[in-house]
Length: 482
Ligand SMILES: Cc1cc2nc3c(=O)[nH]c(=O)nc-3n(C[C@H](O)[C@H](O)[C@H](O)COP(=O)(O)OP(=O)(O)OC[C@H]3O[C@@H](n4cnc5c(N)ncnc54)[C@H](O)[C@@H]3O)c2cc1C
Image 1 (cartoon, rainbow, N blue to C red):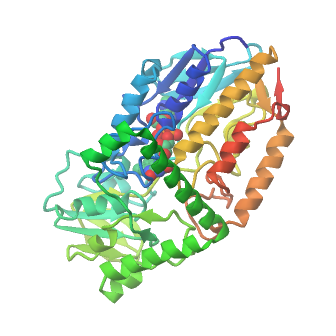
Image 2 (cartoon, rainbow, N blue to C red; image 1 turned 90 degrees about the vertical axis):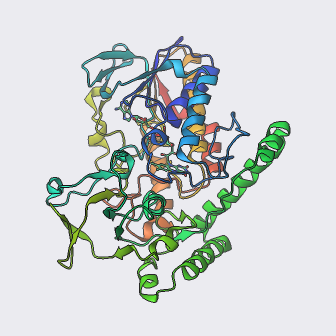
Image 3 (cartoon, rainbow, N blue to C red; image 1 turned 60 degrees about the vertical axis):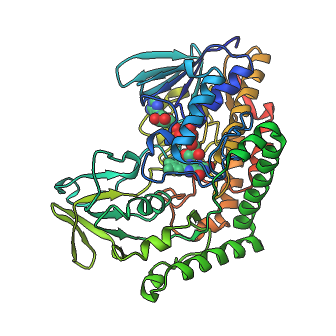
């Protein structure tokens, strides 16, 4: 396959990083299709107040593009978006992006050993190689509550924040207490007249060791890049230890848990409220969150935590399970994303008419999260079982991009046009991953990592280093070329 045409769907960290990697490897015919009007993925979409990263910026950034000018240890949404746009330009991939193009279907053609794509505008695009980089958290999820459309005031999901809504003096209902809510509720608390937070399940919220970087930091990082590299290395080790703590139950888990407990008790004096905020599942089963002002915000007089579920949306507010009607002016859904619906709603058809979503009915699965048998020349970035309980996803995305490059080079070297993982290899891999996940902390409660049927289809069961190593040592014998 000489200079294949390569189409990447999605212009977030995953798609852009893969484009950089392929470009560096000498591939020239690369197009990135993005349905939104700009690059950045989740960092373009999630503009809610206080939106920020949970991983220090030294690590939540490209390994090849350190940024001495990060203003904080944990970057804010606009800072990350600016970084993505700048690095995409500097590494020459911004020009490869076509925005406003939504891919609706992809069909493999045996005769050309390539893919036919269709877009929502009815355009047909042919490509030799297809890379999907549509993210795991790019489709907001709103619960299907009775009366959803009847509410008379503004209602929106945190990932689709309506900045035209002035929250000053408003009564606000917030549904959900996940990673986004713990950031935006403190951000709107002083504006709103009152906030009713509906909590289905209490998160563990540990202190976030954030800090502002001074001009001196920037100068030192710029002048002595090794200092920043050292910081990245250190952060890497700490996050790997944190991953290990979740997997192997090491003392670090108890330490972070202690931090959580100390913060809760220091910030919430009211025993009744405190009782509501103590999770009823094992530490680490749901994503451990980091914030310094979540608990203190919930303790403010204008914030009320309701543990009864919302059962209905009404024109004047919401009804909770105990029958109480909560009258509000605005509803904000902090209800997360359709994380397990990988590649939806695209229709993907592989060899012999194989339907990817039918194949994934019991839960999405792919070899290293990247390759699916019978779907030649299709590569998934941030695919099934590549999400992390802690640490930077960017490391996973970079490792996957390198594995894709290796496979394309291998195909080229064989003088072949297509490459697909052997079914038995994927089968063995999946059995191993699921076996490890069954014994992991994530299996001990109901969380967004689970497919409806009970399978964990989002998370990687090991350390990032293991994923990197397995991607780097990808064995051509595990693949069939044609
Ligand atoms: C609020 C928030 C905070 C997060 N914080 C962290 C963190 O602290 N640490 C961490 O490691 N990870 C975090 N994540 C996870 C984050 O998803 C990953 O770190 C990373 O940004 C994923 O990049 P991606 O390119 O794979 O996906 P995305 O950023 O989701 O990009 C996917 C892109 O594909 C486009 N797309 C989707 N479907 C189509 C289609 N059919 N046609 C064309 N384009 C399409 C989308 O518009 C989007 O631009 C966070 C996620 C969210 C939502």
